[in-house]
Image 1 (tube, rainbow, N blue to C red):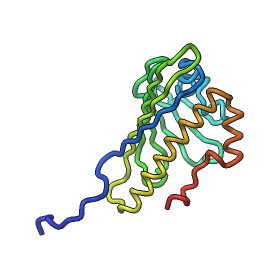
Image 2 (image 1 turned 90 degrees about the horizontal axis):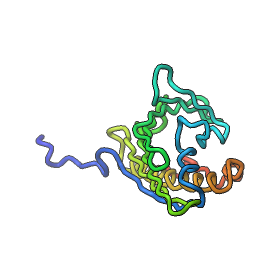
Image 3 (image 1 turned 90 degrees about the vertical axis):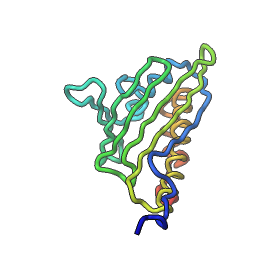
Image 4 (image 1 turned 180 degrees about the horizontal axis):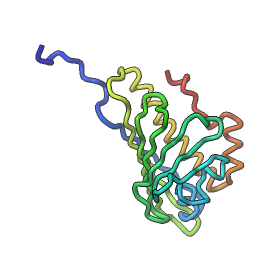
Length: 180
């Protein structure tokens, strides 16, 4: 009647994830791989397509090979060359329970040819999903953040071909069914 006995959900609001990696490559190279506006953006090097949204400076549509029916609508929220880039991503049509993700990459040079990257991802999920669903989403997103950083490291140190080889081996792929 008054809501005193209402069960609170496991998580309310956005969920934050954080991971970091040391990379044996210059901060400038790593930044290019993360900058959707740069021709050296890592997804482009992997054969995916990026198009700037007309009449905008900071909005892009990313199409991934094998997932052409989905559009990753990306908006650059902050860009500090060679040190920080923050993107918001909304997948259209919505995929699963993820409403949007904001990825903030902070890049710190640790030497002339090395850096550290800290990725903070804030994920917003649909309201009203069950505790088991949110737990599965958290597990999936946590693995995805770690996977993204691992691929970034491989890409920066060994090139796009090495990342493609990981995907071909299935090593770096995350299967949704494994988490549900």
